[in-house]
Length: 243
Ligand code: FES
Figure 1: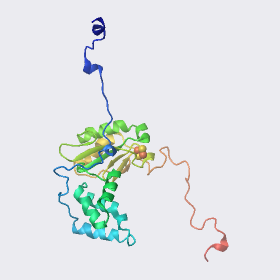
Figure 2: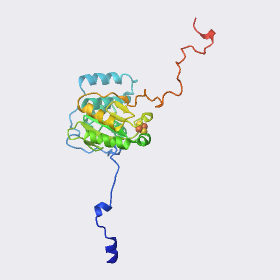
Figure 3: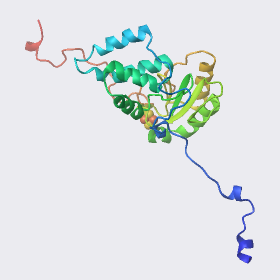
Figure 4: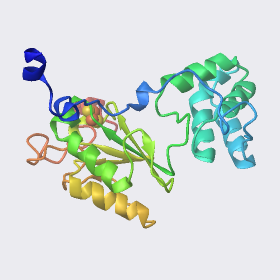
């Protein structure tokens, strides 16, 4: 009795704090589960323009290697529909003449293939080590707040979907925010608010580094390769130069 009294917890909820990391898009269940809007009968046909484009892409590959166009085909589906339902995967397997399993494998391996609706604008915040060191946690919070939804979810108006992703491949410009095809680099909380607000108002924010540097140049200015590069033919023996 004494022990119970002594160790009685006055407020269990207060005592036991539970925290968890945000849902990563790479953590999504790779097994397809039929739903009302994503099943074998979900209507999907390539538009005429996309079909012409896909046929042209397929011709880039040698006879018998049509399957190499799988990434491009799924990308076209995604640009047409906004995401990739299972019926579209079946259409791609039919066009490329590969077993459906090959398309499932591709679609579940690459997180750039959206297997569910992720909002009109898919906002991805990289939280891998270089971005994490440069403050991606507060960038993610700012993105969630500006978009009006938590990571792994879509905003109530369907305009934004936010996801926490692994390395976006622009580590030299960390922290990085990606919206659809555009990379916003060296971002601050204010940049995130401005980017999301511009998109919400129908504008297109300027992509690239927000720190003012060019591409991935050192933030303190150039430390090497500061001079004009030599012209073609530099250092070549005179006898080898074309007369
Ligand atoms: S770690 Fe963020 S882009 Fe590579």
